[in-house]
Length: 446
View (cartoon, rainbow, N blue to C red):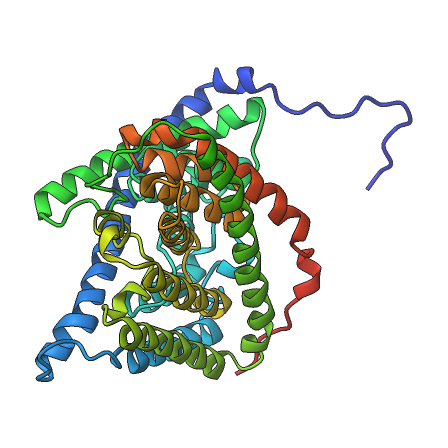
């Protein structure tokens, strides 16, 4: 390689405005819109499969075996099997099952075609059999990987920059309706990728287009199949009064508490992760049994369903808020403890996303605090979601939007409180979280 002449001007990055005006960019937009249809349909199918598997294994199978209702011990063997399947997938298929959720929601680019089967199988086994994780991370990876694979079938020599934009558009389409709004999914991916400035618009516009098309496909398939859209939504939101001085004090307390709990969950998960990876198959199965035992402890201790500890908690948020009056503070504390520990065990080895369990733990924490004077349940619910999300994700804008848009009209009322709790949690968790190098992992062994 020849040396660069002394005094030669540095290469200038492409002008975003000029790039957007090119014919190639117009072709890219058309490509993003077209890809949005099959990828969002595939994402819908993935979510439908996970939902059916959850119902089949937790409700239908015990009934077929002659049980009058699902036994409280049922999650223990169920999660043991989940751990075994995920461990085998991570150990023997390319791509180690995809994104490691204990390391946060980070953008690592689209996976290769060879890695897609392992990502799909690990996520389906984990999410369908009760691991305490959500579907967003696998959908982001699968959407991006499928988009790049499809384009390379037509144009094998696609350049890396275009491939990255196509992968991002596929990810946008895959999560277009999952969080309740295509715009919220866009904010999530934008913050996670770290894009900024004018180049943000270059990459964001194709993604938004694919996301809008994907949301329409989700709605259409949900209506046509009668399965719904699998979107995050609340149907009964109690009224929240205008924020009071006392509630702003609670916002600081919720932010501080969420930062401490979130940091503890992530630190323990990162502590366990390399130890599980030393014996991937056995270790993941053991962690699955731990999740099942925690669900059993909650069911036996409170008389409630063990399923409240299992799964992502996405669809449990609505009944949790609507029926919050029937949960005592003690029951909520037990639920928070069991869900948090199960979340931690799942983060350490299973495959899935960290968002929805964080939302559930935060929501339950806010409702538990609302039993004390000066805090409205709806305000506590929203502040808990925002503060715990930012503690786990380190994405402040997404965390505020998740907590407020979810509540509809009441979200505008509680938004100032949510912002305070998110800011406090974000600042505290960044100060107390150790550097990633402190939890360096070793290569997995059988």
